[in-house]
Image (spheres, one colour):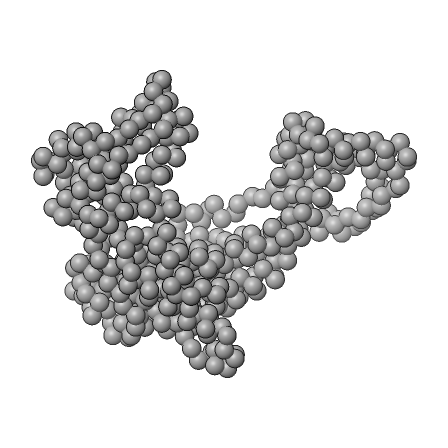
Length: 455
């Protein structure tokens, strides 16, 4: 995407308040990726992304910046937590699974894109199948000794009579006008058993998926009859026809290319594996996890069920609060793979006030939209917004600083009574003012211990 850094920052400003340094860092990383793609292939292979390390407390926007960036450029994105991985030899997820997750994300994106292109033809075929149910064609099945084994058959369709063609045309017109949408019909749909259920919860989901793919290539597809309305049949049959029209090999090839060239992996809680190990207990594999992550970040080839994937040009963004540790506690090799470091600041009172109102999908707009489904108009005065921001700031300052997430807790407390009553009384207009906010929060804020426990 040909977005200048200033344009990227402007787009991020619509959703995230403050943190200008972090926004500039990801905007430059994005622009450098675009610049690299304009170079000849020989030069392009020598330029790798400058990975980013975000340092800051929880709830200040680290994850949201990375997620919004990926949406902005329509890039494959996965968020993983460093604490979920263990050193080779311990029970847990291996670090290569983050790359496999990225590829799955890219494959889904490409599949959805290709499905949109074939959907008009899929809908046409689905309508033909529905017409065949109302006005069956005279079909003669030719004997095929391999039909049972491979599910193949050859059909010979005899020409319809003039009366049959006219009847089919009338039904087609009624279908087009939507007159038969609620009519119940029987359709045959592919039965997709899930053989991976035996692996769920055992840490072997990936193995189960591979076994499922392998078995699906040898097992004949089974169908089952299902009674649905015409409207439901349209959707179901169109989805099946779309799957038949998709080229799985082409999708896999494009998905791998997209993951390699445009993929973004966000590694959260990197500080939790940076703490120095004492050589025993729960810390024993932390340095090992770092050493396992290192080759993925510096560039290696990971085998996936779609084929080998190179991580040389994937953009890695790591983040952590670093309360109990510091970036220098990471092993030197891993530190060197995150040359761009940005520090995100704790949210001030004014930042919290802006978060409540300014973003395109701000918290107050979300609650107003939820109340509108009950026919209720929810309004906040300026005084109420200031009181909510002040309360969040005070609690973050006195206790643990959880950033903007504190606003969720406070808003739930303030709106609890109205949310419970919404839609049950005649009043369709609720106005929240500063006095109401303070009346709901003062009993809690008056006792530091009680407020800390509940909020």
